[in-house]
Image (tube, rainbow, N blue to C red; front, side):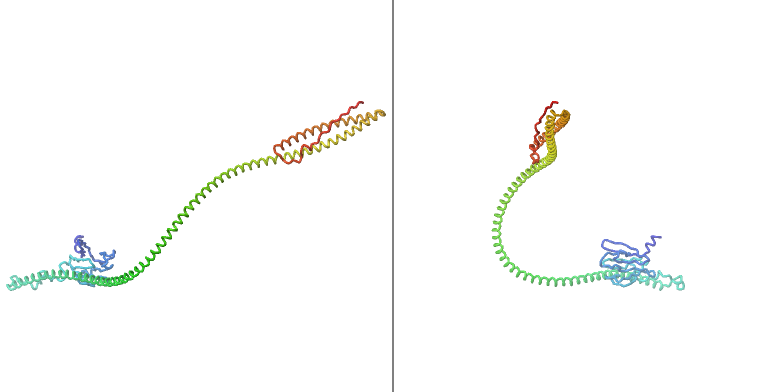
Length: 408
């Protein structure tokens, strides 16, 4: 059943060089155009996006042009809308389509009417059982006439097809001639423009020749000026070479001076380091000297105190000696007069003698301490000579010890 339906549907046969494709039309509208959404897309600039449409109306297929730019042709004639018959040739741009209708294949554009023998004969007009001889003859003549007409119809159909092909070729030739005429017009326009451009180019060449002559004169002047400039450049190059040599010599001298300064800088650096070491040593010595000076000053203060103490002891000894002498005188005077006074004087003398011994011991100890401090100060002053406010001359000299013997 599906095969019968496929055969019964009208179809379009797209014919190109070495290419044939068939497309079923069906009952729904069938669109043809350059757009890819068309039922039959024809990719060519001479085909409009929506070129034409095929529609099924009352059992027949009609083709309608959709205001395309190049137009739609059926059997070589441009149409707006028409009915399609089996075998019609449709031209859409450069594409050739053939409409096939298997159901109505017998009905072709320009075909003869169907034979009378195919029509049913009414019962009222039925012949008798024995036909008349004239009727049989007339039927034979009629059948021969029908055969002749059928042959004429076939020849007419063939001639119509040839005529349609010729019309299609004429249309193509007309289109080609139109394109050739447009190309000829465009070539003529291009020739005119080219001629104008040639004339303009000739004028430009003439002007360029004049400019070339003027440029040649200027070039001669430039060459002369260039020659003088080259001479000056040679002189300047010689001067530059001489100056470069002088600069190189000066540079060598400067490099030697730089080397000498670097050596001197290294020497100064070493001296600076030595001075820095000496400064640090001097700082250490100064710090040690300051501490020694502080010690000497404290010892000098101690010596001053000891010297004052020795001086006080000496004054006290002198007073005791004076008192001792007075006591001795009193004892000598009292020896002859009063024994009691003599005893008191002896006691006083004994007390003075004890105190004198103690003072002499204290003085000796102070003198020893003072001598030891003076010796330390001498040693420090010999190692680190410092301005001292106390010297050995400030140490008092101990007096000579005097002893008295008394008898009771």
